[in-house]
Length: 127
Image (cartoon, rainbow, N blue to C red; front, side, top):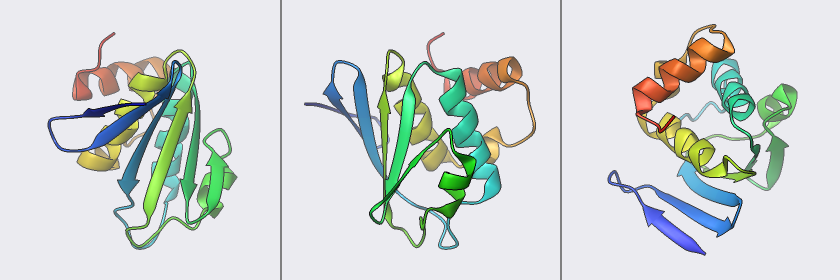
């Protein structure tokens, strides 16, 4: 397992050839809101990878908006994001940045291409 420490101190771990994981602290004591869940869902759709979140013993596939919203993710509980697939690493890096810099930067109702371009430009991800 490879651990890559980014400049801001967060950690992403490579579990195997196509699986990456990161653990972050949930920043909001009130849990996951609809806007954040929608952004996670969009991120999962623009990358060729499957994303699963785990918090407080509960797991949710990011493709399930209701699953995300029903998670009891709150109060600085550790949240583990695991991505599997050919684009697992960029997806985990994007998730990491959302938690570090805030979901507000990606808020809004954008189409897939507009969202992807804005996200890559904002977080300077390789295209």
